[in-house]
Length: 153
Image (tube, rainbow, N blue to C red; front, side, top):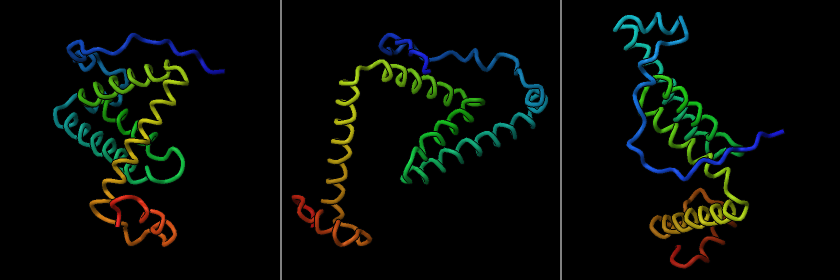
């Protein structure tokens, strides 16, 4: 059974997150041992950056596939990056705050949000088609349907 979501107040800017999180001792002994030397700490951050950005790039590459594909990969990459980089931790907190706000919306608000989102995506897609034309790889049946849109050749 799903836990009820505690609805936070509307997000406001309060001067940003604090850097105190990075001053706490690391609870994982192997990670603390690696980060105890300047060289080890540098290479650990490099590996974390490569893995984190690799997951985010994989999210972009698999996002078009059916299913959730890119979203869990993006969130995983952001979680890996936020284990070592303050900017990623701040971004992660900002995103999660808005996810909690979204979960507190009524079903009517959620429907309006998604209707607006898909309307904006549709307008952007139409503008791209007007500027670039119908792609050559598009199946003939779909291309003939798109040709009926105003301004699309």
